Structure formats: structure tokens, C-alpha cells
Length: 168
Length: 341
Image 1 (cartoon, rainbow over the protein chains, first blue to last red):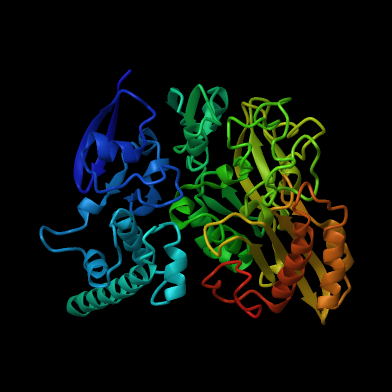
Image 2: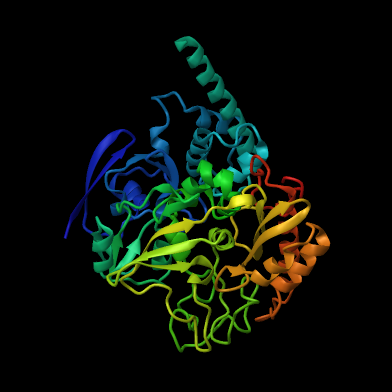
């Protein structure tokens, strides 16, 4: 039996026929939609390489049964940049060498985008490290990752304050 | 992963009649299916059931089974009145997993015994009568209380340890009608031949967790967790502790240990012994001795008994010192200062 999955992926409505209920959201993104930026690392929720935003919240797409998220709004690494303009978190990862091989980077960046939106870590490096502990980096670029998240937090807070000032 | 039928339940009643494995956050079930430990013929998706609210109830809280762990940990009433629950939740798993994992799923999670997770290893819990591979094996994460030759696995939840300390009650629905079980006795202890009976009948489902009023303990409660790394690791041993202080004396105390048994281990004798005592390390040490009374190694894990005793003392000390206004950067960490983390 073929089931139809409805997802909004990076702003675009998608209707995806699924002939196998076993597909995870990660499988759907990579193999049905062709969005291979989201990585399959451990496939068991331990490494965070598959992190995406589901309805604005960061989750491991490898442990998300696709059918269970029918109707959800998904943001992947491909949905962050505005044309050629990188998202501030992407720019900060480049600026601060927040990666070496790059395999974990899409998951790191999606996790960092959500961490900043959660607004609990602020500029505390310890809270950032704790908040990013669901993303492993086997190249151990952790120092650069923490610097990148700090910098992006600063940039995005300044931008938000700027926007508030202009709208006031 | 085996092929399965997928259905969605729109009502609790439909879920109980659907004859399948309940899928909520999926963080444990899908993982077990990927490694071949769980092989359900049918998945019943319960994520659309109306059980995702946290309500005020008689001075306490009534938590829907589908409330996500992250939302429970961030709820203002939990942070204000049940801070050891928030700290326990935030000390578990990762931010991504806490965003997916549910309250009911956390209660129902399978043991992290590595032999249970390996379908090639005999395991009485997975396959009754096949034997226990953990005995004589690596037992760092195994029980020192309430275990038998049939099974030495532990329940890995942090949340449940805090819930047991807070006198939480599990509300269950099924075709035979609703029933309730205290959190501290919800998970069965193993019997001589294996893991013991299932806590739920196949057609039963957890609908809510009820927390009674935390009263005078609201701001004297902590969770403390010893683990191999400070974040994203299961407890080797942990403790949830709360005290109510009046005029320099303890008038009520709560203590539950994690990582030591197949259920969160509520230490009622230790709690009783603290009543009327001053909140001193000497008092807490006597209580901690009682907490691990009857403990015995299930392998080369005797050190866990002393670790549990020390964790209990420190958790009680931290509880007596008062819950910090803001939870520490590293929730439940033994490396944070004892003052307020």
C-alpha cells in the first residue's frame, strides 16, 4: 500500500508517495527529495549529524519515523542561506574554523540555529557546550564550534536589537 | 528493521484496541527496531492523542503522557515547584532527543543493558529462559539493588528517579478501565527467571503522570548524576533528593536512587531517619547508609554501592542548601560546586 506523506520542506510543500512505512525523515530527505546536506552518521540518535528542525525544534531525523511527522514543517541545512548570503551561523562556522572534515557540520549548524533560538545558553560557553552535546565531531573542532556559536549569538542578537530599534 | 503495519490512533480508546506497539517520540522504539531487538508487527502512532498538556491539579501537576521531555523541563511550574524533575530531565540525553522523547515513552523505555541490546546474546528480559549474559560480563551499568540471577539490568531514566522521589502516580487506561500505580513501584523488579511481569498489559497505555503538591520542598530539591562524561550519558549512579526544613530541622525528606536497580529506588527508611534531624552531613551519611542497605554487587560493580552512598549524601546536601534560582549550566553535574552548581 502506498501512503502519501505531506511535508513542508524549506518552505516548499511536498507530497511524497511512500511505499514503505519504515522510512525515517532522514531517509526521505536524502533519498526521496535529494536533500543530501543532512547526514547519516550513526543512524541511532547518538551523533547528531542528521539534526534538522521539525516545526522549529531540533531533532534527530534518523529517529523520526517519516509518517509520524505527516504535515510537519521541516528546515534542513539547505534552507538556511538566502540565495548567496549565508545564514549568520553558517558564516560564523567558516570564520571560526568550526569544522575540519565537515561531515558533522550540517547537523552542528542546525543544532546551533535551534540553540540560539531557544535563548537559554546566551553567551555562556559552558551552556553552549552543554546545549551542543548532542552533536559529536570526530575531528574535535569543538573549540571552534563554541566560538562560532558565541559569535553567531552576538551577531543575531545585535541584528534583532537593531531591527527592534528601527521598528520602535 | 522488520516490515510493519502503520496505523494512527485518534483517541485513547482506539489506541488501546489497536493491538500494536505504541509509537510516540520514537527515540527508543525506532532504535530498538533498527538493531533488531524490537520487532513489532504493527506500529500504532499515538502522537496525535490529546495528551500533550500540563495541567494544575490540587496544588500539583498532571502531565500528559505526550508532553515532550524538553517542554516538561522548561515548564515554569516544574522549574518553580519540582526543580529536581527539571534538573533530572536536563541531565539526560541530548537537546535533540529531549525535543522528541515523551513523558510516557521515558517511563516505558527499555533498559540500556548492552546484552539486552545485542540480539546475539542470551537475555532473559528479551527472550525469557535464554539466560543472562550480563552476569559475569561488563556490569558497570548494572544493578546493585533488587537484582536476581535472572536479570541484573537497570532502568536508565533520570526523569523517573525524580518522579519517584516526588511521589508521582502513573495514570493508565485500558479496556478494563483506568488504574493508577505509584511511580516508585511501576517498574517490576526481576524474579528468579527474568525481568518479571510487564508493567502494562499489551492493551494498556499511560495517559498521564500526576505529581502531588511538593509543599515545603519546592525550593530544596536537587538531582545529582555520576556518569562517564558530563553530558549525554546514562547514570552510573544518581540521586534525587528533597527536604523540608523548619527551625533548623528536617521535617520531611525524599530520596530516590537511579542507575542501581530495575526501577528508580525510593529510599523510605532513609527518609524516615532524617525526620527530626538537623540538615548536616552526619545526618545525611546515616540516611545514605540506610539507602544502600541490602545492596550487593551483581558483578564487578561493587564500587557502585559506595558511589550511590556518596551521591545520596551530596544530593541531600545540595537540596538542603537550596535549589539555585537558575539551574546550573551543567545540570546534575558532580563537577559543579555544591553551593548552587
